[in-house]
Image (tube, rainbow, N blue to C red; front, side):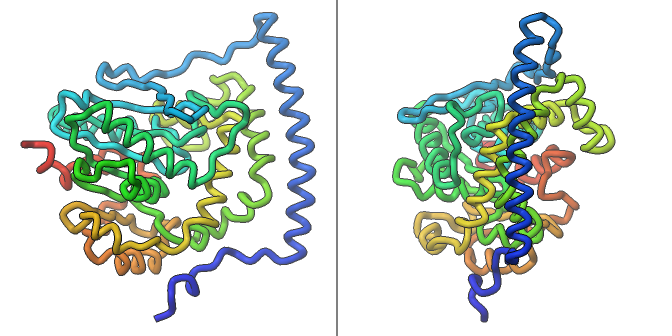
Length: 366
């Protein structure tokens, strides 16, 4: 059998395209950068005169949902958390690592449904990626690569285990969040004896750049991530009501207001730069799965490790799924039969929560 490294390759960009992309990227960077600077000056001026209003935000008013920020030792940037329920009063606590974009607000409906299904016996915490939301943006234009995000998740999990000393934890990761979750599970800071299960939802664990979506996105990430950051910054200066209308039109029929509002939190220059910066690192750094046997030795067997694949996932080819299943023979592999897409938070949060709860309820209802 051909080794995975020979089956998966990043798209090859020819010399002519490379030169063209560099030229277009440079011009875009200069033009959009100048427009962004002018828009910032214009916004400041009109705000002082009282003519500029961003508009009100749509807040999730559930009493059991807490949106907060955490500062870890040695980290200059805040960590955004969405907490549903109280880990001190629950039978178990699910910690979710988002995909990319790593804005935890996208998962409120998913976490709310889990909390409801458990009869309030399951607390849930979604841990945002550093710099991935304008609610908790990076300071000083800092950029965070994939390795930094991996280390960050281990430190957050360690901090949560200290904060809730009696809590038992279920770890879940969506898309690239599954990679971050497993890296955190391996980390020496984490007390693995308190981890009941690990769940990978549509996990991108190897060779993301060789997936169908990876092939189409790679040139954009390689050449245009900075101009796209300026474009997001320009959109950020529009009145929020205008942005809300534009996003609703783009997302299709009747998108949930909460999801639309979280999309708006991505319209920030350095947030967009962090999304694209991390995504490019994913393409270059998530290649072969590092020592999968080690995870089994650490206790991840079919009772504790679930991998869930969506059908026709553009971020996971069929070959990816076969290779991941072969690399993790002790995991419980589940193929979606409900038509749930990779980006389930847009329309399938509640159904995904129902499926997830069916795997974990024996840890909760005790």
